[in-house]
Image 1 (cartoon, one colour):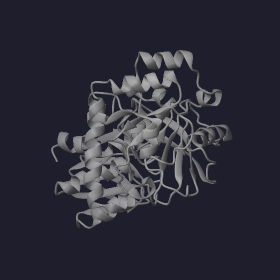
Image 2: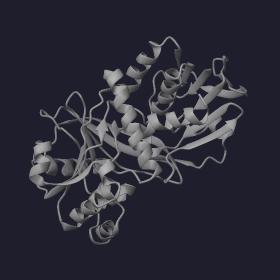
Image 3: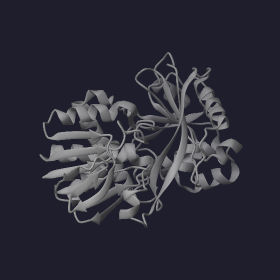
Length: 373
């Protein structure tokens, strides 16, 4: 079988990986010289802890298993089974963490409620003030800015993979066939459109009523911390954002403990992961209303800096990168992904939202299974 994958981000690359693993030939086409979207502008978290139960958690756990397997074969991914800690500072936040640990699926997520001393034993960099922390053993991380490069190098070694950058696909010319803006026609048995947040042009022509929206966020990265941050770190505002934490305790938190005004205005939470070079990737904000702003705002960065410094008990290293990014999210946020046959032999796979980096290996595996690869 010959598979044409449109899109060089992590969802597209994982579809290419699944096809090559199953013995097929793959041509992957990317409109930029390299992928430039959400697949690079994220935390690199394999984030099991906050996922909704049922199908979403099953997808995340399967993806976590696949990421670890792929990481063993592709060391350049920087896969690290680091887990995560969410420090809590008062009784209301503590109650939400307790409710999470009481979930029926808590063991599958690797949840445990730790004392401050136990949390610091796992992550000694957390020298600030907090009374306990929610631990999720199943969370992990990879290096988002370089993951696709290393995955493609491994794919090329198969002898059945071709990457064609700098080409925008403009037209479906027949079953399993597309034409790019160089005038070249690429024919295969199946085409997978994994174009991320690019939902205009050909995607709009093929799926004009697409149930997917775009979301914008802001993030930053620091100079090296100078010591290991041995886990990823979230704050209690993440309880408000992720479906796994829904409970009566969360309802009480939302009713009785308001977010800081800037956090509420920008729909913020703290997520933080250390990169291989020692720097910290920190975010994020959420903007849903179109048209998006074209600039980045300092107030969210100031808020995140204050939260991080309160957990670390020390000044944040100098910020060396700030950026904004856009990802695609199903308007029905209970859906992990939107998968649709848009023409004979042509499938569109988009809309995983902030779950794309986490769930992409399992999303691609499901596509391959459903299409009979």
